[in-house]
Image (cartoon, rainbow, N blue to C red; front, side, top):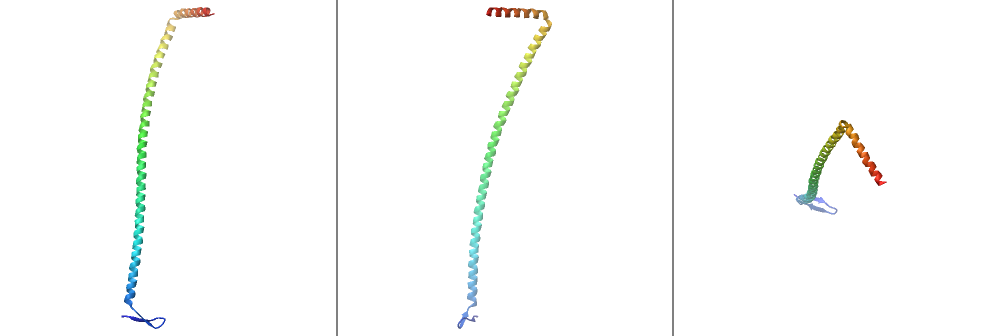
Length: 139
């Protein structure tokens, strides 16, 4: 059961069960302390992960908002471009119609000048006469 061990002076009785129990209690205390430290570390990691997840969710929300704004702006720009294209086509069509009409008038004038050469000369003479009278009256 018990053993005697020699101490500095004399003999001392040593209880092996008591020493074993003390070691077991000490190991249990150490294990509890390690478990508490591990739990705290684990809690800190979970808190850090939760913060990271919240940051990522916030960034995703901001990105989604930015994408929505970009879609809205792109839609507005697209609408403006369609309106510009439509106005440009209308303007070009109007210009083409005016140009065509002007060309037709010039063709008629040119045809008239070619077919009635004598009449044109007399008209030019009358115009020159009117101009000279106007110039003479002004002088």
